Structure formats: C-alpha cells, structure tokens
Image (cartoon, rainbow, N blue to C red; front, side, top):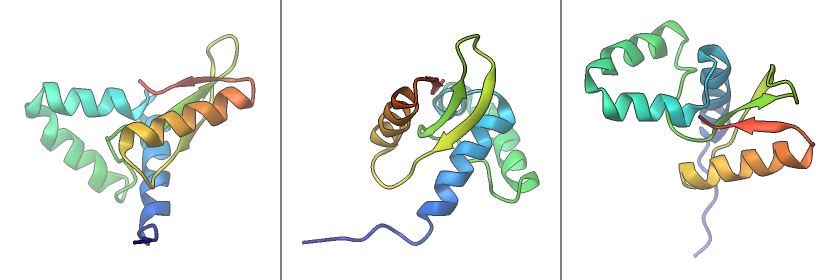
Amino acid sequence: MRTASGIVRPQIAIGKAWGALGMGVGTRALARRVAEQPQLQPFFASLSALSEGRIVPVPGGVLIRDAGRAILGAVGISGDTSDKDEACALAGIEAAKLAGDGG
C-alpha cells in the first residue's frame, strides 16, 4: 500500500526549524526537556500559542552551525519518524559542509 505524506507536514517541518532557531537548541533537546520535566508542559503550550503553533518540540528541528559554532539558521524535516527526520536534516547539513546540532 502506498501512502502520501500528510498535508500538514510542511507546517510541522517549519515548526521544528522555527522552534530550534527560536529557542537556540535543536528540537531533540526541547523534546527531552518536556519528557524529563513534565512541569514544563504549560510553558511549551504557552510557547506554541505565542508562536502561533510554530514550535514543535520533537526531534527533526536541527540548528545549522558554522565551523566556529555560530548559528546560521535551522532545518526542519517532517515525513517519517522524528528520529529519521532528524537524521535526514543532519545528513543534508553535513553534505553542505556545515555542522548540525539536533540537541
């Protein structure tokens, strides 16, 4: 059976990149914070509301860093499991000879 990607995948990918860039850490770190500190769930719900849903705290949002570790931007991937999304983002960033930081 062949399935197509969901119609909100672009928004999820943008939310992953936007969240990583906005918070200054890869979304794996954001996901870990939510999982390890459930008391932060209201904070992340507030962030999501303030950003109009553009913060998605699951792996797949990866910061792009230069050789000096300065943040240049972020990449967000959605379409598979979050771990595979993150691996894809990291591979693309590495192919561009930059450093990826998934958190």
